Amino acid sequence: MTSIWFVLLVLTWGSVAVAASFEQDLAYGSDPLQRLDLALPDAKGFPTVIFLHGGSLTSGDKADEDYRNVPAPFPVAGIACANVNYRLAPAHDWPAQAEDVAAAVAWVREHIASRGGDPGKLYLMGHSSGATLAALVGSDARWLARHDLATSALQGVIPMGSIMWDVELEQALEKYGRERVEQAFGRDPDNKMYENLDAYLEHWPIRHIRGGMPPFLFLIAASEQEQPPVLATNRKFVEEARAKGNRAEYKVLPDRTHYSAIRRLGEPGDPAFALVRDFVHSASK
Image (cartoon, rainbow, N blue to C red; front, side, top):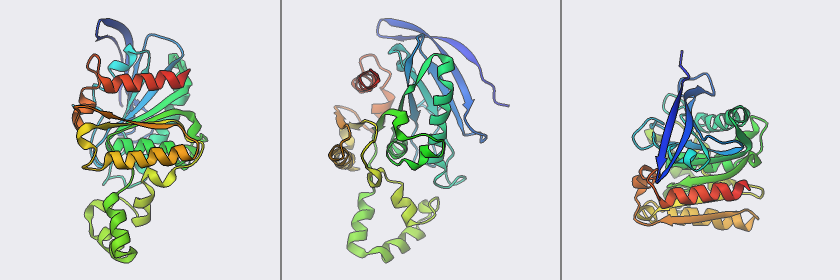
């Protein structure tokens, strides 16, 4: 049986020390991967950021070197952070990953008030493929609807370092046609997690932009603007979201790579964390 334990953390960020509680491996489902860690500030009515690791939906873990320290700066800023694991392919085909993100959001919404948080102040954040998941669940209403929630249950979405559609595949569809692309798609073992080409295409957030979405803040490392084309796809998402009356913006992180952007999030004065913190606090007012 997975244990749930509490420790008193003294998180030092700059010159500020804040006492916080930390809960590890809380179950939001029955599968061993449906677990989250929860870092809480010593406060009341705080917002919560729900964070999703990357790994191409086939690997990655909240305990990985890249992701285990993500929650650390949040309690110092008066924000809780839930660091989420989810089921992975090939053991679990798509859409298990999106289903788990929605389930984790529903779990946090149900349980955060008992820990002092405000269930009306939830934010979804992800890095790399976790950013794709965050953007999808924040835009495609069907995932949260399975838990009788609308996307308005999220006060904001923060995708970090991911394209919003497969540019190369879309270009191939235009150049070679559906039949040839579908055949090639089916031969690629990396695509076995998707039932078919349509399921793959529909998992990209760009296909689900509509009015009434929560605010979006895209974070883009300087080195990933063009290859892969994170900037172009994020910018198009922002433009289309704004055209439908949503609040959306993107920010480029100078001197950051795909991985340093997330690894340095907890450094004192980190500009990426400052953007996240300010976005959360401004949207929570």
